[in-house]
Amino acid sequence: MTGTIRPASLLAFLFLYPLLVLAQQKEVSIRIAQEEGSVLLDSTQKQLVLQRKSFKIHIMLENVEGVYCYASFNDSLYRLADLDPIPGFTGLPNKLIPEEDFNKEKEICVSNDGWCYWFYKAPPASHRFNRKVVLLDDNRLVVSKSIKQIYFTSTKKEVKLKDIFAPLYLFFVVVAESDANGKPVKELMRRKVRIDWINED
Image (cartoon, rainbow, N blue to C red):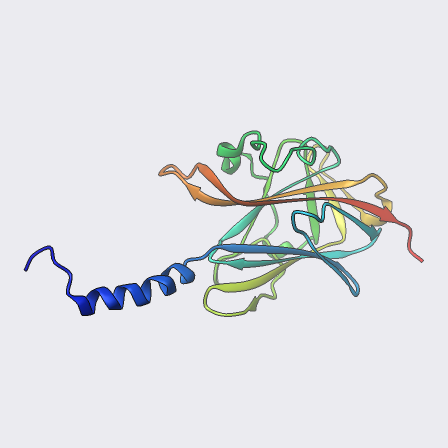
């Protein structure tokens, strides 16, 4: 009969539905590591102290293409409360800073108004992370971005981390939903961290 669901079909649907939802689950975790130290950035970890030398940002992506990152020596976004709206959120795709493929320069772009979009697409497409990618399973992977210098977009100058003394503010945003025009309409998560520097031993 049209419009009816057989008990066997209903049972199969009820059994498979949690698996389908789980398969589409979106999740992102972020770690910043330097030598042997590693810190998971969560809602309680908002400050970090690093030596003024190379570090890595590790990101686990599950059913997510990429992460927006705002890097600045200005703390305007860092001061946002967890539920405060992000200024210009729907226009993020229009504020992107051009970056080298495969993180060739091992740098992070600093700007007071631009955002980086660190995404991964399966080869042979280019992406913004280091070339080495760790595939955990069909839906999850770990990508990394090595940082050895700061690129100032306003002056187009590169500065080594050993010459950086001011706190660096990173603000990460993952989009959960976009509209038909590609404008972000809902956040999946946000993370923020202030990086302070200490001298090498």
